[in-house]
Length: 174
Image (tube, rainbow, N blue to C red; front, side, top):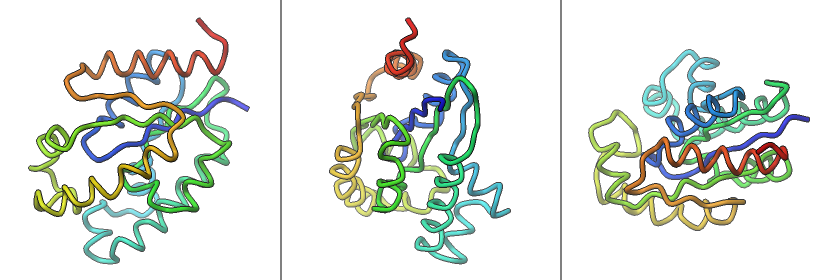
């Protein structure tokens, strides 16, 4: 089975951008879990949250994660950008164990807020709630991570090279 590297971290940590760059470096497939959810549901994430709520979104997310992890995507390997809240589900954390090497892209609160404060992200409406959510999720990211990379103040290309080095270690490539 081809290796899967799953990127986790808070919103604004760079999972999608770093994931795409890493996949290009490795010549592996890349999947953004949020994109999978919007493609399969036909709705954008803010609409899913406002119409059906966060619990419904998390259910769609778990279904998408299961589908990706059980599917054959690439002979070489897969880089998977998880959603910032994917690991809040104990079932998602269980699915990741043994199915992927999880790399936690650790970002500080100020950097994350600066990157997402003007976005349409449903959980980034005000700084106080954002900070509470950030604090609540830190231990989850740490508990699921096989590797942690601090990303604040670093170029995303450098972070992608570090993730690629981790992935190459899985496959024995140099």
